[in-house]
Length: 503
Image (tube, rainbow, N blue to C red; front, side):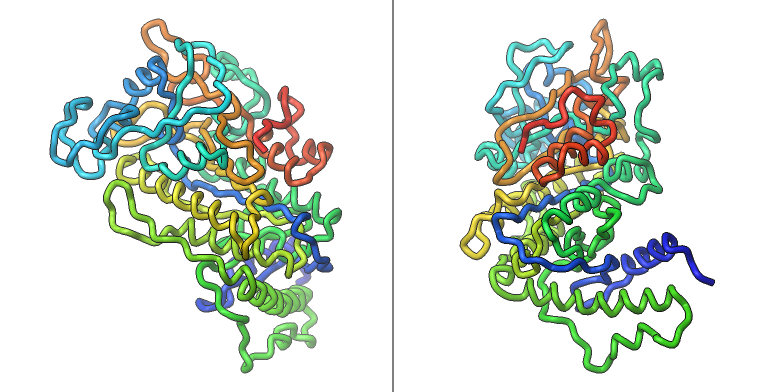
């Protein structure tokens, strides 16, 4: 049986995504055909790095509004249940384990919020507008107590915050959302569908992600080698898949020298006697992939790429023992490939890395803080690494941003939070206009006693910044033209601004 070209292509893509060269080999089978390599100078290089927080990060405990009105409504909504998730105010000293917290009047156990100290204040360079429903003369902000490195990055203008981002078809008000007369993205609150929507703009089943689509648009103009244009440690990614490029999957950590096996003739896989198009195609891809793995492995094993330091182990501010920070290790691999880009003849690259376990329906106090601490340490490590690669500061050539399938409910369910919509995200890099919050940070609080929050339906934040705007701003910096951005992000024309200005 002969498969259609489309089916064969996707079969091969799936096969390669699931096939590794072995535990000691660093690179998986690459499925895209190689483009002609053309050397690109360092000044031509740009990379986008997506850090996907898998499970739906609770943005309300990540970036907080601390003016009296906002904090009072936040604390009232979250200081409830058997294991309250409300954080302590700015300036609160850590309370020793086993004592009674004067704020919550409950027993303080190890690794619960009162032992962490208060939230970490940040002051944006430009004051945030006061939205309807917020009773404050000045809006003030803070970060989770475990995010000290992010506080430093923000203060040093290395990192920006984009407030209340989510997928939107068009701007929507609370009354429109509740009435159901305005279109919204399909299957809100579904993990699989919203992971797909954040990565591609469409629900599960989509085949092209916006990272891959942007790579498609710049690849010809920059003469980039398509083999290593979109790269993901561990697993393939919808975000990285374009029409012309497919993700190249790599293992992470310390990369050995070229992987070879003198006892195996990879060309035999081609099976020139076979009449099966699929077998011949697969054999050709395997043979090419072995060569590609050797090429990439060789490039990252010498020169500046080989000097990239390993990240330090993560030690939780809550007192947990040190552990390997898996996200930082992925970013070490990304840094090594970036360092090798001139040798590989690459002018544009898109990377996708992940940090998992953000689905905190229960036990949020035991899970989210350490995840945010790992994220903070990994961002700090990656920024410091990029500022000194072989003596050169490449940080202005790389923009890193966070994404997650959705935010979480503003109210607690007793010990955690449930699936919601809008959330807050970080953007980092030497080209980022850091030290600011972009987009409108929303009014906080659930409706009660005459208070009607225009930014929240029930306990769900309605996004005030569209995912299309977020992605298009990154794409414009990456070199994608406005007409192409309008194709990649078809809802962009429905919003007043197609560039948020953070980079």
